[in-house]
Image (tube, rainbow, N blue to C red; front, side, top):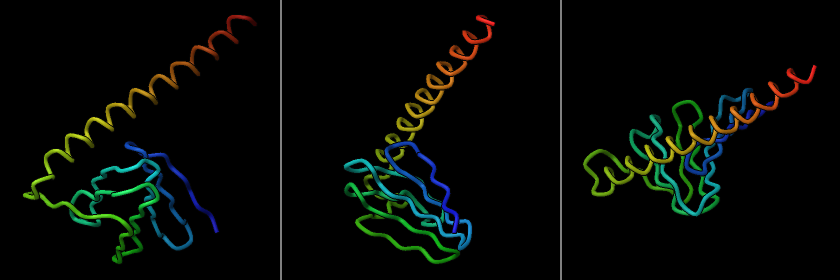
Length: 110
């Protein structure tokens, strides 16, 4: 069995089982939001350790809610998701820039 682990914006970790095709989203933060197409809206992770699972056409939620367009929290949740993505992209860019700088320093010392 092979599981690919990917860090996602907003304190969510994605686990993908390549054997079964099962995708599990686990919340590492106290709460988080993530737009997940399989659920037809924004999944609101209500607590640390909350889980959303997608296996083929079967979905399940543990300590989560789904916010659909028109829900009173939908707009604020979308704003939160956008903010998390921007912060995540900045963190990744900063990390890559640090790695690039370290490699350039190694190259210049040759």
